[in-house]
Image (tube, rainbow, N blue to C red):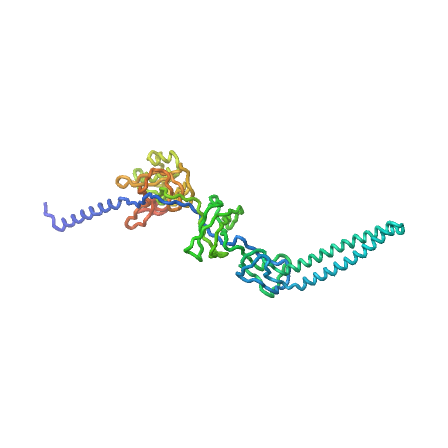
Length: 461
């Protein structure tokens, strides 16, 4: 056998070494690594957030029932006024003239009434002596009644003229502070159709209210008596507290969005809150202290799919978990234990569960939200269960069905005792080299290496 040249031996050894290197590296990279987080104890609080406007509890717009030229102003912005205090005066000349005319008409009516009264008395005496006929007595009595009615009419006209004259003097209807003034001296006020607004007076500014609009999806959990906190941009470091006083039944529809006005009473002893400020309100619906809680990321997590025999998904734990969460009953529990029915193939696909196995992260999130696992939903009944995953022997995922309660959007109350405090639950997969971090299955439409399906996405070519 001819003797091999040294360079050929060196080349063969290099090829064998490179192959061994890549094989070992591939095995090492194929092992999935998971991010975990511990089940802990703490507070879980359900809240509803909205924005609103700060308004005085009592606010009155002062107008004018008389028309004329404004001749005098007795109050300005931020002035404190008392009930009955004169704050403006209209030019009263024309109204005084009307009063004088009414007084003259009344005097004339009274004079005519006196004459008619004397004629009636005289006619009655003459009739008693049969000097005049009955028809003459009746005419005198009719004239007396007519003059009497004219006197009453003149008195009413005089009273109306005096009332109109009084309207030229504008007074404050309440004790409060002038927060708006819409007129100046010399301006003409026309009150022919409606009373023009002259001033706006706020009552006690130490008592304010926040008028906020709550979406119809959250209004069912808001009721009078709930506590609320809010902040304003003027004092970002201060948190103000209030109490829900009223949930108004009137629906407000803007761009097909239905909201309901909710009124929150607020104490303002330092007068920091001013009318018109925007408040960022948080209404506390329910709070539980020192309860077991699980991260919401663990409830949303679903393992990625791995190709298995016959084209089915090897991620059986993921498929079982999705099916069990969607079913929420005995069938879901059997699927979690690996005893479910054989999974069929999706037409034109690689095969897998046709219900929940191919759901992407967005669908999985909606599924958990329906059962109280994510978002701002309230408490779930004791029988409501969801799926989480823990790490078992050799780093394999083990599905666990747990009963959940209220959630604050970050953590969810853990009502069942399947997991103890400190237990590690999987919240996502560690990113491999050249891949971005994720919490489970790749989003729909995003394939894995070499065009492999990932989480219900379509095969990439």
